[in-house]
Length: 392
Image (cartoon, rainbow, N blue to C red; front, side, top):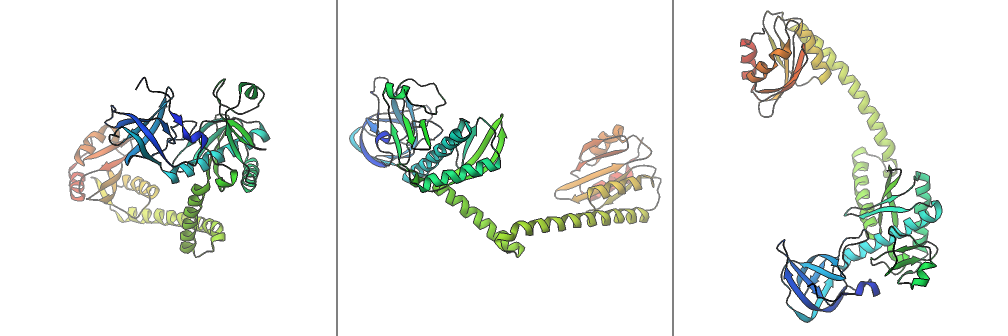
């Protein structure tokens, strides 16, 4: 394969070419057990510029990945592809169109941000859920709202998107965005009044094909701003998912969809009020339970699932004063085990923790007066241990 000539890149001349015929020049096995096929020409885009590689089929054999090396484009296939002068090749159309929508949308966003704020695109990744773009300066929510509006106006205007290879003289006279210092074989993607950028990927023919641009989120990142955004059909899918969730929340809260925000706020306030009431009741219950337990020279062991953690700790403190040994409160069941808090007013539990954990199949530790952890023993075994164990 080292002597193969450079592959003709059909996606440069026609980004909407999804079905084509090409000669299969070679196909060899690869180290991962797959096969690498080389064509004389291809519409499959190899990964690059933040955009992932196309997938599809060659002569009915699945293409799972595409990459370029020394001008030759290799198609990773799930099986061997026979040499053929006129093989039918098909690019996964929906996947390619969605990626073009997002990539061209990224150019619109990056171009507008560069023109308006002077910030460069310093990182771009197109994921399954959305695309991530990093900019070299900080952008406020208001800044991004204005950019998003302007970007969708560019889509509405259906501006032509032109990709071309300028002459060295044209390139020298052209101001364009690029992450790399390029000097030859530079391909520019131009959107009049919006952006001109060096890029190797296929793009839409006009901004109207992008459909829509939606910025999902933003955050500070390495002194600049990272945004998440979606375009076109991916934006529609994102909206549908949000719509479905809004409908579910609306039904659960018995509130109109445009009122679910305030309805959730009311629910959260009510939840906080209930938590405070439950906490107060738990403390009252802890006091009553402690009062109901008789003083003892030995240990105290209780099983309690209704109290919260703070109330259990309070109960242990109260019970520790009612025994000469140790007081333990356990919550859980025999199947999943028990969380425990054990306290003592008369011994250093830290020095006894190893023996206690051994007796109740536990793991945990703490301070001299209180230890906590998890026990894998059943309730009866825990009770038997407390009845028999004596602190030093």
